[in-house]
Length: 181
Figure 1 (cartoon, rainbow, N blue to C red):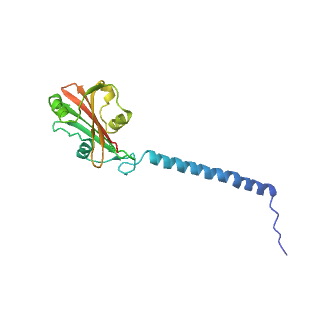
Figure 2: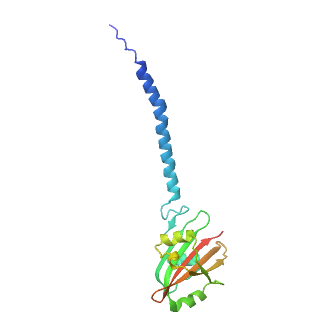
Figure 3: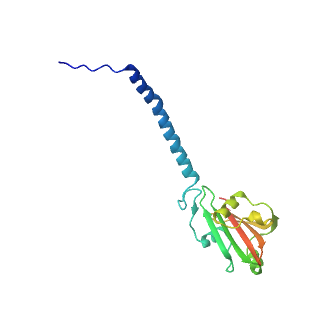
């Protein structure tokens, strides 16, 4: 007695084939888009201390002070700092409160040739100050700001220092610096 296999239903076979040919590529496309989105987000928001461009690095306030070429006075209070690793240009922010009595001495120690009133703070600086939890400089306009450039063998640094008087006899100091080469 021989058994014969029943012939497959052509409609069922056609449905399976359509399912494989249509649904399969859509699933692969969806997986590919999800993978690209994940990779893009990893590039846009690198993990802290990863060393990748855009990552905020854990450094000491002394290292940030050395990078910005601005010393932190002994009388400074509420010192906050941050250092962001860049693709080409590194970026650092430093902020603190300083008693009015030490303000002129602090300003005199800087290489700023001219102080001017400013009503504008660059958005990259704002992002850095927000990252370290510093007071918002745009809420204390106008600011007294000065710039200086520090050529060095390894890194040329452009630094901006802004000051604003505070109630209680102190001044808020914001320092931002970036590597220009």
